[in-house]
Image (spheres, rainbow, N blue to C red):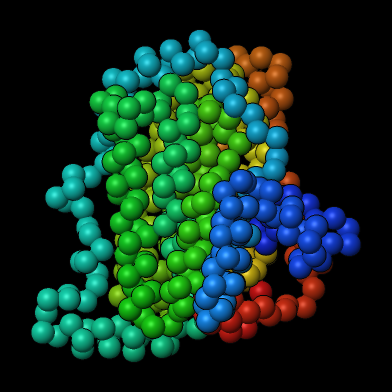
Length: 419
């Protein structure tokens, strides 16, 4: 999870894929015909249910709901920027094939054996215990001390973690490192599967904690997760592992910071168990960050010019946050609102964005690169000068911040939360 600095234009999730005519009513014959022309099966289904309504008038209310479902196909928010694919020159795939042994020795060491890993149940009430109900009540008692705005950021973090299928899919789009079979024995494929397995525990743990807390609307949260996974994600990495691993390096550090701050806030509010949960997840993210930054460090060693160009390209496009298409079926600006709460609480801020970039520039020793092409020198100058520029822009933006407003969040039963 992290704050989206640049909005990505997305189709409104409440609208179908076709455009409404200027004066069309949702109930007009023209609109009805347009909506049924999406597929032949919809037309047949609507004729069928009309016959049912004539024959069985007592079922009309139920049938009307089903007709509504037929007329409203699944239309999640989606990316609308120009999508580029396979931008890496084919000959560079050989670089990643040549790094198989390196990945085995330097990447897989950052995975933990399953038997030594923590599991969500280590932090939750034991359902087989005679004291289970008392343990749940203790958890709920601690949760009562946490404010709604804290739960908004915790839910947002959990939803981001639960969209893990999207992130594994993204990694498996990368040329030269993807899992070609679903069970490939290459070091790159082993890493992707095992990384996914480790990350899977994060959403599981936070989901169960939130369920037991009794403070949030789980159905609305579950809908948000389904919408988010259905929307997918194009972080504009173009099937290019140079871009992909720069993106994941940034994101793992962002999630490390975010979970670390939710741990800090939980401790301040007196919930030490929740602080331990968030801190444990943050530690995982830090370990994964180390692995991804090590890959990019190796690319800088082998191909400094190509890597600094990729770094600049990724930063010019801005880092699209994993959950930026978040939607709960109601709020078209859900991610922006969630990000505003995270910014206000100090969970993840625009300053963090600049700090991460500065950290990566230093981690990869970008300022010290030599022997670059003309384009490479321009890219080097751009990324090294970007952190202070972002900070200046943020300072100006903060000076223009208007009086805070409140919005309802469905995750906390539509209670108002200040942005």
